[in-house]
Amino acid sequence: MTSTVAVTQPSDIAHLIAAVARNTESGGLRKFLELHRWKALAEYLRPVKYGSGDTVINQGEMDRRLYFVESGELSVDMHTGKGIVHLAAVGAGSVVGEGSFFSRLPRIAVVTASTDCKVWVLTPEEFDRLSLVNSGVALAVSMALGTLLAVRMLDMSKRVTVL
Image (cartoon, rainbow, N blue to C red; front, side, top):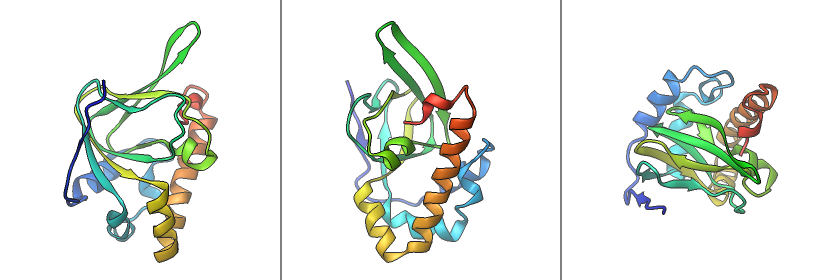
């Protein structure tokens, strides 16, 4: 059962920015999204809190939202005919959902909160609005996600975590 709690008022993204700065994964967001870009992007993000065990993304759903992880850890699992395959753990300072964001294909895995989490959601509609208002920031977001997507695809152990 999913029981998300939407934070009603957009709050400061300072903790998200700090989490991204601390994240050292290859292809991380910090290479393309400097502080001034995050400040512009903040208007288009909405914070959501998930409790441990909550479903963030359902396998097979047609959804293109991106989830920037501020705190906590997400588990990425694929349900197959032979059982559940654990694909990855995604922590603070990273993102999930980039595969479907770009491809417009159904989600290939289920993502659940392994711990209490706070994520920042970017919908395709808000990204389109950002593209019209601030194309430079939209391009930086696209480059950051594209880099992360490429790195995940090249790393065979993470290849299938492209959601």
